[in-house]
Length: 457
Length: 111
Image 1 (cartoon, rainbow over the protein chains, first blue to last red):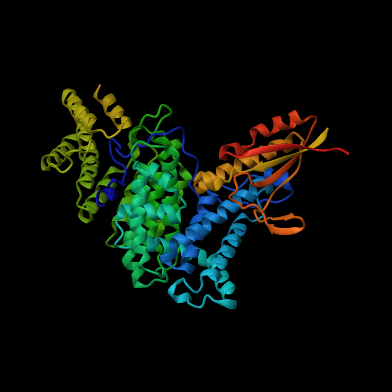
Image 2: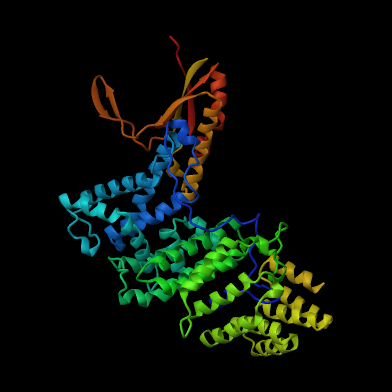
């Protein structure tokens, strides 16, 4: 799980992060839309906008989190079934009746009623969340309703996020279970996003659930030490999720944008919570900065566009502004965390009006500090690229060569690519071509191969 | 012009293993189809039917056909059309076919 963090920052001459293909431009800002209710008579309701994108998916996540709080984590599957039923009911009714005034409340009511029915029916045989043992009789509806009050739902989603990042659940399984229960993705959708078989995702999810079965309650989110302990894992999982959407191998574009979107949405949820707050601001900033460049990374012919050549007007400047906000809020802690440094580096790229105006000296300084915190070969590579911009290609090449000698990045195409770039700048064309050919042989998908092929010619 | 009834049989989305997103998209298609009928000025009404039911034979009440019955009627729509063929034509774009459902078209007999 260590390398992904270091792929976070924008690179130098070859922005090796721009590997995602596209069927077209990414949609606009990545803000979470507000829910818009609609009303009126039958055709009026069918006339109205309809529910916003991914409404079912997001509601599913919220409701599963809340029901799990009530039923207990060991009854996660029961919670999922209840929510699934509610969505089917909504589909059945709304397709002919139109969308109700408050679709969220409608779904919540249906899920709540079904939950109460189930509790009544199973009350004797089933255990619920440990602190809710009095789910009986006249207190039942009251207790359930209290949990559906919106303030609780917000916290329930956070609690669920922490539950999903249980230390005994392996990182890929953490991401899979987050996508499934918090974000409302289906197993098939997750499999497509990760380019593995649905069976493989099922296994990860089963693994995660079996760990959860042994933990009846959800973690508390009121600033207790358990939260501090698990926060790094949650941040790592969210960044893994984001990374998959941003850098993932050749796959459907739509699903990949969704992954970035979901990661940002959940990171904001974390950052906005008073008990957690500023530790996550830098992470949100980092994600916003990267996501802002998604639209410009691939041109109309599905070719990768490197950082130096990207049309910066296609960057999402609202998202950049948002990132800058969060970066400011994250403060300047001494010592800085890796998130702060990565966010600052990404921010330098995003706020430079053009490639030439990039403040490479600042970026180099940030990489110097990042390398101390995260002494990984990928960080060293990125630092060397920045070094070349500040002290010239010869110095950069020396740094890169020493990396190559250590053999750490033997299969990483962007090391020879960077060397090729610097050789080109020094007029050493034959050497450059050789490096680009090596890069091409290490390329992991057609888009990367094409970029290196063009550089080699 | 007369009124015609569309009876929607089967096509339960549960059988399709839809993700929440796919359910939403499917619902959107229904919305668009009905909206189109409204724009043509032929939509007279419609509603979903709950899957609870009772059946009476010889004035004896029993539980109705179960929801899992493949051709259980899930809802209806009423349209205005000149002929049965015209009404049937309108039903061709119904999204129920994606979920393997059936549309039965019946004239509401004018008195």
